[in-house]
Image 1 (spheres, rainbow, N blue to C red):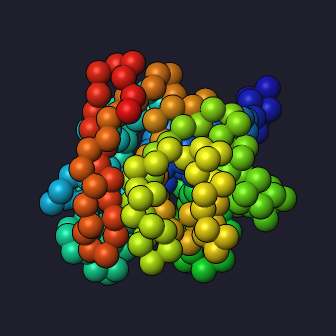
Image 2 (cartoon, rainbow, N blue to C red; image 1 turned 60 degrees about the vertical axis):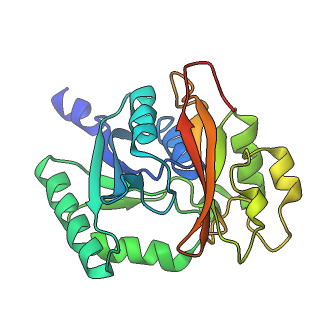
Length: 239
C-alpha cells in the first residue's frame, strides 16, 4: 500500500512565473495533470524599480496575482542592469534551494523557441531538477494562433504591458489580449508574442480565485521598449 501511494504522489515543482498569459496558461494545464503539484511561483524582480523583469509591471500586482492563485512566491531580485553571469548565479541559488526542499523540477512557459528550451535544459542539467514544458506547442500539436484562441475562449484575461516597437506600434501597449488584438496583429508577429514582440499581465481566468483589478497608467518608452503601466484598482474595477 505504501509503495502504491508513493507512486501516485504528485511531483512537487516550481513554476517560472512571469505573470503573463503563457505562465498563467501553463499553471492552468499543470493543475489538470495529476502527476505534478505546483507548490510555488518563481519570479525575477528588477530590484531597483521593484517591477517584474522584462514584463515591467509592479511588484504589488505580482503579489495580488499570487494571493488570487493561492501560491507562495519565490522572488529573485536582479540588479539593474544585470549581467548574464549574475542572473545565472542567482538562479543557481534558487535551484539549490529547490533541491534542498525536495522539489522535483521547474516548469517553464516556453512555447516553441528551441534555443530557449535548450538553455533551460542545459542549466538544470546536473541539478537533479527536471525541466518541464507544459505549453510547448509542438507537444500540444497546435499553433500559437490556436493556443491564443484557446486561452481567450477559456476566459484568460490579460493586458499588454510591454511591446517591442521594432515589431509592434506603440499603440498596442496596454491593449487587452483578446480576439480584437489577434485580428489587429501584423502577420509577422507571433499571436502569443513568443519572439518577444510583446509581454503581458494576466489578471483573470481559470487559475484565479478573484480578478486582479487594474487601471491604465502612464505609457513610457524605456530601454528601447514601450511599457504600459498598470495601477492597482479597487476590487470590481477594471479599466
